[in-house]
Length: 372
Image 1 (spheres, rainbow, N blue to C red):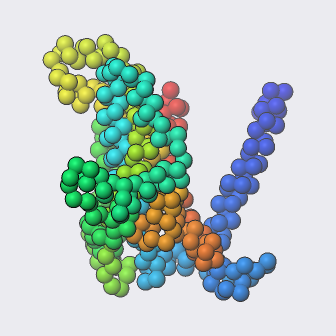
Image 2: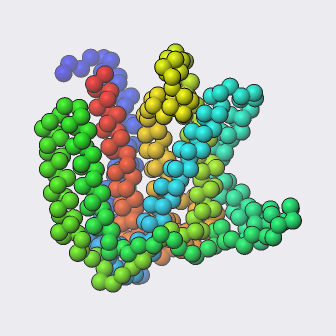
Image 3: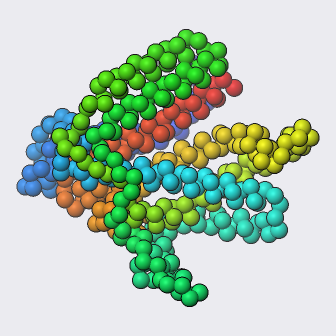
């Protein structure tokens, strides 16, 4: 490749950013992964030493997180993150789409309403958490609103409840994940067959069958723990989910509103001429066209929910186990308990979870750009 003056200029302009990314992003990620493979923090005399003596322990910290009796809080944190992510996505996408549809109908004062709905998105999660913490106080805020119309005061611990619902045994999780993987592979096979990609569809179908058989034969009897361990959805997260949806639904509204405004009016009129009702118009025409926007919103909101920290810290504090999340536990282990290796292991698990959401989306987007 011939180095022209423009190429040299471009390389020199990009070089500082590449070096900074290599050192302060990927270098620190590598350092964190290395620390997670050591025993840094297990010896209190070495935890804060200027030159700590670290010993390589392999994947022991990761094994402890998923199978050690002491780490039951981490496993509950993963369950909290799952329920928070699902409800957060459903709330933001549903409310954002509803607001966008209403504004798309040309209501009076649309600019004012759009500004009002977008305003929470401009706030930091710390500010949002402080506001909603005041509103969810057990002896004030939302609990006393019914008294304004003569009804009795509510007695619900929005951020303090320890009641759990939808409880399940952690030992059944490998079997469920195996079946889920088989279902994903089966879906990929079906999509490949629909697109005429017979070889890819056949491979995916065979893999789906093998994974399903593996799940039924092996994972069904696999028990990560030698005892039952029940986990579920803590009702104290309801308040945090409401605050998060309140802040981020305006963002999804803006995405959906831009998508709705980009759909040609001729397409809607053609559907109406063909006899489609308003419900059929949205179901068969508009919502499918909004699919890419929904996917982008789910990716962005999903990675926010996986690494949520500041909102939970501001609303419930760092010491309330019922509203704990992995990022908060990582902070406690690293900077309170000085268990740096365990904190690094939690950080790597979070990185893998976020990467599992982001990387497939990026690969799909890059493939789409190459096809164009």
